[in-house]
Length: 409
Ligand SMILES: Cc1cc2nc3c(=O)[nH]c(=O)nc-3n(C[C@H](O)[C@H](O)[C@H](O)COP(=O)(O)O)c2cc1C
Image (cartoon, rainbow, N blue to C red):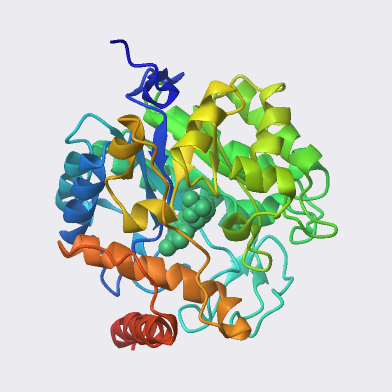
């Protein structure tokens, strides 16, 4: 019998790569590198588990382009060839079942916490509304050009190590998204002001990587549908950026939203129609589809096979992005592809204490701990045990912080 599951359809990208199905593991910080951001063998174990899970595309967590500027402890940084052997093993294990691997390359800009970074940078010297971060210094033009070069260099090292492509992290309030936002970018030179100027940074990164890596290397982007903040990057502007990147030839656009100050990417907007279709950004994708030819991936909220199938069948989206469900069930793609009516058990983490439940770090860290377990060859936990989990999460977060501190002092 022919396979009629829309999730099983292949997808050919402009660069020539073919996704064997429509499921993608979205970026999740692995937080398993060394305190200096070096690659370790556990990446190989982790990505073997996800490869065996059957997704057509695996996108890594943030790979930092500059080890001085990181978003969290034990983030991996790739600046040169020193870990090429381990990067090769990582890419090979991720591709061992015929799927593709892209590295998400990233610079956090001002979203680099003060216990890791005493001198964060940003398009303009506008602080974040939190004591966790030191107010940033505005970048000079020379430094902007250096960061573009760093993105290009990191992509080139990853390509040589066997990665099929890179995804630019242009969402969630990191540096590319800071450049796009009129709230965070108040420069008066060619890198700020009009939308054309604010998008120059991402366009130049794209062009520089394309020139160096060639036509057959995949380049995608994760972009906010909007910042969901007054005076921020709007939906209309996001569509204009997508149109410009589409014209430049980008291979895939992943839609997400929000930032550290407003993390809608993990919660959605809770409208009735959103709840029904599960995914938070489908309405935006529907509008965007009319303006670009680039395949669109939507991440955030997908939990059931039925909603994933419906989203692909409707043509509103080309690829389903999944994060938290894959941190507790690496085999999820095989289950939804075999059509058994899968339903993920991911639910908002609640401890009963609102202040704790509202802390972004709590949720992210709990899933990070499950990812670490998989990388150590253990089964991830599937249930959160209230306050006990809080203690566990805080301990593990503190432990990661201590590792970095030891390296830096
Ligand atoms: C543990 C964890 C780490 C994450 N790290 C990243 C990251 O490195 N880059 C990124 O773009 N998004 C990251 N995200 C956000 C996810 O990619 C995704 O956008 C979000 O979790 C919503 O998707 P979901 O509902 O399928 O979990 C992370 C999320 C979690 C839970």
